Amino acid sequence: MPAEIGKDVPRAARLLRDGEVVGMPTETVYGLAAAAFDPDAVLRIFEVKERPSFDPLIVHLADASALAEVADLQALTPAAQAGVARLTQAFWPGPLTLVLPKRATVPDVVTSGLDTVAVRVPDHPLARELILAAGSPLAAPSANPFGYISPTSPAHVVAQLGARIPYVLDGGQSDVGVESTIVAVPRGDEGWTILRDGGLSRERIEAALQAPLLARTDLPHDADATAGLGAHDHRAPGVAPEAPGQLLSHYAPRTPLLVGDVVALAKAHAGRRVHALLFEMAPSDLPAEVSTTLLAPSGSLRDAARALFGALREADALEVHLLVAERFPDEGLGRAINDRLRRASAPRPPT
Ligand code: TXA
Ligand code: MG
Image 1: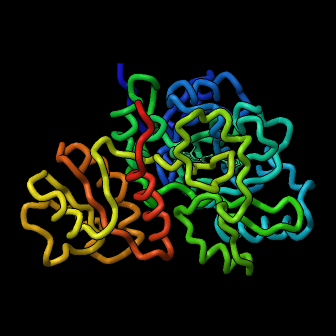
Image 2: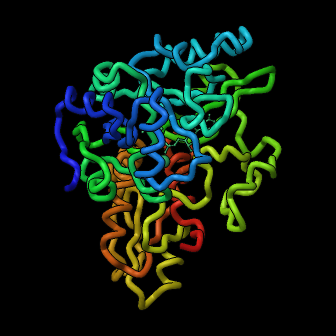
């Protein structure tokens, strides 16, 4: 029986209290939620998603005041504490995830044994109602099978995981459309580090912190942590081990996707069925036989981010030979869009 889709918060909360996993709307993408302090329920997330256990989960809170239940803020320097206060005041609820020293109460299965926990407050009324009704923070990854495109509607969740979960709480179409931006809070006097571009732009975070964000790739690569990944490690070179959403092939459609000069790519594949994902308008010299999706005729990166994953899914269902996508401006939400397209187009692991 496929999961039911509905707006019954008490019912979803009851399922969570009973140790079940349910689909949860957020402003970024849909999550696959379980009670964060219930290790068996959290394990079920990994089973349902077929997610490797080395990839830790984000803990979702109803309110920033619950932060101290999961994070050890006292372990931070006063400067880092002040930075956390500034960011949470400015951007929570919203698409910002902070990686902080964890409290011992957070089960290891949530954090994959790391001594840090990723936390955010989602900007969706039903998500926050659900967390309150469940009476517990909720651990949730995006509600897609590991490696596939993230869901931005309840129907996306049911299409892929519906047979494995009882219920998806219907919060409509996700407004932001790409996952949260993940920032690691400094433990000592190193800088603030961005682990994943997402729905909140680097520029806004840097303005609030009044400091530049370091990129994950600026950090030394720890070869040890690649151990569990086996011979086919398709992580971005130089990306550190806890691999926070940094697997190179991710968010991937089944149809091959190439990113770059769409006209040249289409011409190089003349005679094959090609579909192009474009920002605001089609180039005048795009071959006429190429079908197209315009992500944002408005020219707004926000609109493009919101449309991205749904458009990738629809394009994947066209059963063409090849998808091509253009690169977006490398600023604001354009960075998160380019990141997702790059991973969606990366060479796949052998299946
Ligand atoms: O917008 C979002 O963030 C969505 C919604 C549902 O909240 N969630 C989401 O979760 O994208 P997920 O699991 O697909 O991606 C979370 C990323 C993972 O790549 C994981 O490696 C990273 O967060 N992460 C979690 N805990 C971490 C930690 N302690 N240190 C570093 N990275 C961590
Ligand atoms: Mg994900």
